[in-house]
Image (cartoon, rainbow, N blue to C red; front, side):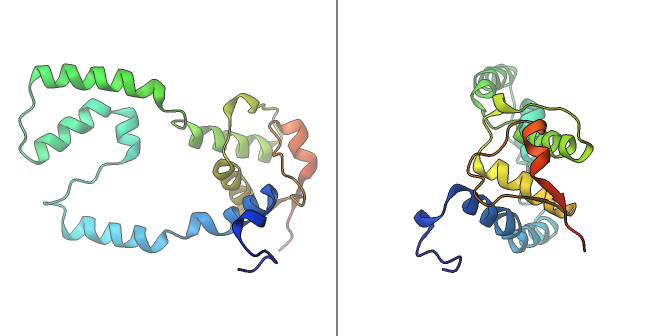
Length: 164
C-alpha cells in the first residue's frame, strides 16, 4: 500500500489528511472529462443539473428539468416544491463548506484573523484546504498535526512557503 502502512486503519489523522490532499481531488478528472463529452453528445436527452443550482435555485431548477422533459408543472407542485425546499435546506449541514474553506484559505494567504471553530470541518474539508494552500506553494508543517487548527492565529505558525 505504501506509506509504510498495511491498511488505511494504520494511518494517523494527519497522514490521512496528507494522503487525501495529494490524491483525492484529482482522482475524478477522467470522469469529469467523460461527463463533459456526454453533455455535448446527449444534451437533448439528458438534463444536467448543477448542485449550485439546486442549492441556490431549487424550485426553478426542478421546474426547468420538468419543462425539459415535457412534464407539466402545476401551481400545487410549485407550492409543494417550496415546502420541500424549506424542509430540506436546514438539514444541509455541508451546504456552505466550500465558501467556508475558501474563506479559511484566503484568510491564511492574507494573514487575516478568522476563526472557523464553529464550522465543524471534515477531514475532506481540511484536506481541500491543505491542497489549495499547496497549489499556492504554501505548505503546512503537518507531521503529527492530528488536530487541525481552527483559527488563523494557531494556523499561521505552521505555514511555510515552498520554494520552487
